[in-house]
Length: 161
Image (cartoon, rainbow, N blue to C red; front, side):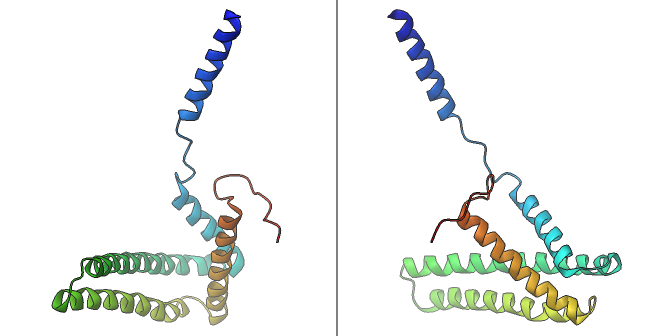
C-alpha cells in the first residue's frame, strides 16, 4: 500500500510540475515567420522576375515601414483620444486629441494612396494589380488560419458549418 501511495504521489508531483511549466510560446519568432511566408506568397502569386524583384522589394519594404509607423501613430493617437473620453476631457484637450487622431488616420490613408503610384514606377500595372490581389489573398488566408486556430501547430480541420 505504501508503494502505491508513494507511486501515486510521485506521479501527481510529476504531473503538477509538467503542467506548471509554461508552454512554449507559439508567438516566438512569429513576425519573422509571417514575413517569410508573406514574401514567398507574394513572390509566387505575383510571378515577378529576379530583375523585377530587385526593384520591387526595396520599395515594398519602405512602404511597409511607413505603413507600420503610420499605424503605430494612429494607435497612439487613438489611445490618447480614448483616455480623453474616459476622463471626460472637454474643450481644447478633447479637440487636440481628436485632431491628432484625425491627422494620424489621414496620414495613413495618404501612404496607401501613394503606394500604387510608387509601385507602378518599378513594376508594370499588371504586376501591381497582382500585388494588391495577392496581399488580399494572403490576408484572408491568415484570417482563416486564425479561425482554424492552427497558427501555433499542425493544421486542424475547419469547423463544420
